[in-house]
Each structure stands twice: as C-alpha cells, then as structure tokens.
Length: 397
Ligand code: ADP
Image (cartoon, rainbow, N blue to C red; front, side, top):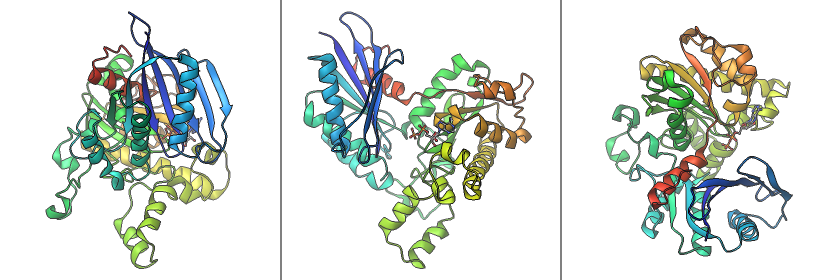
C-alpha cells in the first residue's frame, strides 16, 4: 500500500497543506500543495500537484466556517483522490513552543496541555495550530503527529539576546525573547550553502517579509538574534501588528482610553501595522498601488523600520556579509527590496536594479561589499523534514 504524510499550517483564516507520497518501495515526493483561504468569509480551495500544475480550484460553501470545517474539506478531497491510502504521519506548524520545546516533538496529550498554556502568548496563531491537531486526532486517532515550532530555531541565542529586562521574579515562568518565523529561517539557512555559498558561513541578516515580518541575524547558519521576541508583536511593522512599540502606549490604552485587555489585544494583533497606519489595507500590494498619503506613509514606515532594524542586527553581528529577502513581500516586491537596499547603502549594499527587477537570486552588483539575495522560503518542507526524521519515515522530502 502507498504511504502518505501530511503537513498542515493552520492559520486564522487559512489552512495551508502539503501532501507527500511514497509509492511502494520508493522514496517520498511532494504530491500536492494547496490551501483553503477565506475561512469564515468566502472560503476557496486550491491545490497544485507536485510540479505546480493546478489540479483543484473551487469556491466552497460558506458553511466552511472554521478550521474544523476546512479539515473536513481536505479530508474529503484526500479520500476522493487517494482512496484507502495510509497516512503515516502529520506534521504541524505550531507558532509557540515556549521555554520547553527546543525542537520538534511528537504530539501527546501532555505536550498538547503545555502548548495550550502558551495560547495567550500567540493568540492569533496558536489556537488555530492546536485546533488542527485536535481535528486530526478526532479523525485519525492512530496516526502520529508532530509539532514543529517557529521558536525552536532561535533557542541557541545567547542570553544577552533573549533576556527581558524586567524584575527577575516576573520573568520566572518563561518571560524571555523567543523569536518566531524559525521554520522559515531554518529552511533559508539550510539552503544558503547551495544558493549563496559565499555568505553561508558568515554574518547574514534574513528579512522574512510577509503578513508577519521579522529579521533574523545568522552567524554561520545559526540564529543569534531576531526582531520578534516574547510574542509575535515586536520588531518590524507587519500587516496588522505594530512591531516595536513604546510600552507606555499600551499603558495609555488601558489607563487613559480605558480599553479592556481583549480590546487592547485586538488593537495590537489585528488593527495596527500597515492596516493601522493606512486605514486602508493590511496587504502590501493594495498599498503600493494606492496614492493616498496614508497608504504611502504605511509603506514608508515599513521600509524605514526594516532598514533601521537591519542596522541594529548588523550591530548585533558586528558587521554583515549578506542580506537575504524571503516570504510574500520579500520574494515578490522588487520595489520594497529596492527601497530597503537603498536605505542600507551605507552598510555597503549596492543594488543591481536589473537583477532585482528580474528577481535573480543575487540582486547586488559583483563589487557590492554586502551582497543581497532573494531566497524563496519553504516552511512546509522544513516541517516535512522534521516530521519524517522524528517518525523515522526516512523521508527524502
Ligand atoms: P503569510 O504567509 O504570513 O500570510 P506571505 O508570506 O504570504 O504571508 O506574505 C503576504 C504579504 O505578501 C501580503 O502583504 C502581500 O501583499 C504581499 N505580497 C505578495 N505578493 C506581492 C507583490 N507582488 N508585491 C508586493 N507585495 C506582495
């Protein structure tokens, strides 16, 4: 019988998935990659096969209201496509691993209990990640599941980069800087020796610029600092999150404006960042195409913060050899890359405009002191590798 393995990345309004298949006596390969977007509003299902050809593209009934409903749709599609296939394992993206998980872990009821306690630290992501684990447990109780964390890759950072400077007794139960987007950074670090060998062993700043955005400082492929910290609110300006913010503003929201904790949470996670500044959209594409002053200010702030914090990461590394762009904005927006590189000219970044426009892997001139690169991320592949290794599936994925 053929073996299958799944990777699930469950968000607040989307379920991204990959299906890996191992025909009898053969090796693992990517069979399908897809997503259900617009869960709760106008759900839509798309799937591409392993070669990138679209094999499903359909609007779903509005009754697909939550992650559980999305898993039902996926399960139905898998049954229809692959009949009685045997699922050997399911790997999940879980945003927060807290202080105790420095690497991927097989899911047990005890592990789940511990991960549920971290929900307040990642209210936008963690509940959906865990709901997907529950949904798989309910449907396939015998199938082993693996949780892969966005925090793990950063766990070897020096203490000076992870300490939170509050009274020690308040920090006892895991109040520290964790860092996120770790699966993305781990993937990028794993391919640098092949795609950018001249910087892989050096000092590299990776800019993961998507709906969530952060920087990671790599030395020799290991994380030494990151802009996201205790929660996924710190650092760069994001789609709906503010990034670095004077905590006095949060006190003001509570004390002077009288907002409740839930209201403040909603402001910080859902209403700020690009959306907050522009009042128009959290989507970079919409803002780049909009001439309103507030839209332009939002883009200016995004670029300004990215460049400013690249300077801080260069300081943490004691210099920089390479700058890598990844994720939705980093991979697709030549304009944002060009603007950030221009603001980093003082560091020695000398952009090759043609290479940037045509999205070459290396986008700086040959003589540039600091090279810049575009490296597409693949968090799902990283999860597949971890899951395969942990479950002993000998995955070649
Ligand atoms: P996530 O996985 O966190 O949802 P992505 O990495 O998919 O986020 O990034 C989403 C962001 O990428 C959105 O702000 C979107 O506007 C932006 N994006 C995608 N393509 C482009 C493009 N061609 N130009 C500018 N921004 C883009």
